[in-house]
Amino acid sequence: MKKNLKERFADSFSVSKEIIMDTVHISMAGNREIYIENYRGIVEYKKDIIRISIKDGVLCISGSDLAIQSIRITDIFISGYIETVEFKLV
Amino acid sequence: MLNKFFDFLKGYVIIEVSGKNYERFLNICLRRKIPIRTTKPCKNGVILSINRTDFKKLHSVFRICDVRIRILKKCGIYHLIRKYRHRYVFLLCAVMSMVLLFITSSYIWTVTIDGAKPEEVSMLYTMLRDNGVYPGAKKSDIKDLYAIKNNIINHTDDIAWLWVYIDGTKAQVKVLNRRVVDNMIDKSIACNIVATTDGVIKNMTVKQGEAKLKEGDAVIKGDTLISGKVSAYREGYDENYMYVHALGEVYAYTVHTKTVKQKLYDTVSVPTKNHKRYYTLELFGKKYNLYRNKNIGYESYDVKNTAYELKLPIIGYVGIGLFCENNIETNIIKNPISEDLAFNIAKENLEQEICKGLNIKSQKLDEKADYTKISDDEIEVECTISFIENIGTKEPIRSEEIEQYRDTDATEP
Image (cartoon, rainbow over all chains, first blue to last red; front, side, top):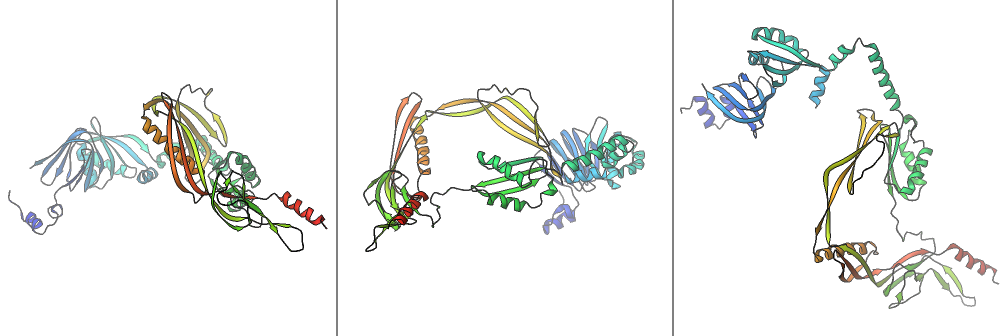
């Protein structure tokens, strides 16, 4: 896969890609909590599936008892029993 | 926790957003910088909580998104005040209860004493009462707790230290008892040194007084080792005596023997699911049992006491508490242990018990322990330890004896 200019710059200067490329940054605590930064918006919000729009596509989180615990313009914190985290690139 | 408290102060609304585009509604809210707190998906949409002030901003948003908003609950002080503003009787009662609470919390309702011996408790209650600390006393009248503490310490012999502090409507007293030390006798008082235990004298150093025994002599507990009654000779005069504070150290060979019966099983109490709870309500120092008859009925049980005291942030304990006595039934399980293990356990306990009664600077010489089986599930263990120890302890000479001697001495020509 061809790397773009920003990605090559980040690689060569060892800079975090999420800052340079404005990509999504995901942190998980087991399968109970997920914290997502740099998202665009919410596409779908249900108990068993949450789809979140990110820069390159859609991030699909499926599981059970999913709920958005806190939501801000920059980050979102989801809790519940997470089964899959899937990227659907556009 | 703090955030929740501030949210409660500001006031917030729990709403249900339903419709086809509720996700869009959330996105627009975020872009318009309307803070959304916890969210929870529901059947046709989402339940979320929002600030009271931000709720008005939602009018323009829900029209764009074609969603319906339903208020589920209004929370916070603002809504409470709005709800109860026309209920004058309720407001009056609320104010009256606040005033009543303020008045009642300005008195002491309970006095608790921790760490005191059972025989001291009633004496301490009396002394506290004399110093103005009693149930029903006004807190503002108790000004100097430091002076109360000093007064009690100075008027009692056994109490080494005492802490008095007031927590809400409860006066708490913590007592530290004085450790009794045998040899603490004022040096101006005449005394003998007597044997604390049986033994054979190894060596003795007399600094003051007159030695009554010598090395190699056998002594019985209570024998005078160094006498404080010293004979004073003056040429041309009759034999005379003077009473001194005897000083010295007497080391002797001593033997301590103790026996104990040890079971050949170890007991473990395992709690069952059965338990009985008995509640007691405390209202301003008076306790009311919330049960008729206390009938536990278990063969073996553990007791767990829990106290729920009503405490307010500034006032502290307000004098209202609920005490729960939970009696949990236990099954006693006997695990058999070997004779050697039982012997070792008993031996260790006996060693500890013997060492508790020793004098300071004791030196262990020899130890013997043996056991005899007295039944199928019990052994008797005997432990004998020999020591070299300082067996002398000071015993004041009776003042009558000194006075009698002085009287007879004065009447003699």
